[in-house]
Length: 379
Ligand code: AOF
Ligand code: ZN
Image (cartoon, rainbow, N blue to C red; front, side, top):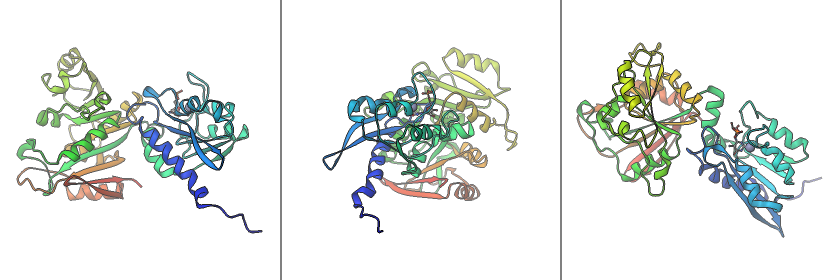
């Protein structure tokens, strides 16, 4: 027998509500580490209409979870409803019981999930529990979008390090700065606003010490309403050359500043920075490149153990090159201005760009004012 006709609206319903859950989850990006920023929407069918009765997203610091928030809003209306979650509901006992239990206890009839949670405490057990409790479970709706939303959590759980976004701004003639690295305004205000938004959605922002010496940046979020969202600031500084008078160090008591040095960096420099409120961490030398720099893989794993899931690197050419050569980049974002700047510090070599294109073949582009913003990802 032919299957009964399905309205287009029915086919698209799951995607529509999963998109809403993804949008809610994004509110937490940069703010929930070490936990993922999950979104949840609870929907009831009433008189032939879909009604959203609960919305939730992971709260600052990672708790309460998204499902708890959405269930609290839905109250008794969760009974018989469908819950859309961007990540598998948890199955482990944290400060409260598993979200899978809470959903079942509230009488939710159906769960639509985007992705399995690779956290070893969950790893499929959340969905399994829900099936055992008799809920109807659909997995894999908008899984690619959910992967992007949770790439920080996934990279940390699977590889023990944060997901890395490298951001650079280049002039039309491929320069990152003026002669000798002197700072030059390259991109316009729309690009700056996007960079500040990227900062707000990151757990931490990193630069190399060369950028501090050339630019003396603050690396805070300066967008109306988002000033409170300034992430941890990190400087990769093999030999502890970071000037105590830099804006970063002077602000270290307001926004945390972590400096990652090589194991043999001078102890006296460490003491001065520590006294200024900076946290200094040490890793081994870079054995691969032969450069007198630090082991970036070890540095990133250290950040992973500290709970960082999303790291934005505002890189100069050397740091960008080292990260690409070590294949440690999940996302490469480039703002390209329409104007040349003439003599100056060249961006990435064609060889490096070719490596990057192999590592991150998936490219999207859009305009940011007069500048072109390209985003490259693994897939
Ligand atoms: C959910 N909903 O909103 C989030 C989840 O330290 P805990 O007990 O809070 O657990 C953290 C783990 O829970 C985290 O590693 C991830 O596997 C999951 N995050 N789960 O059901 C949420 N943020
Ligand atoms: Zn949970």
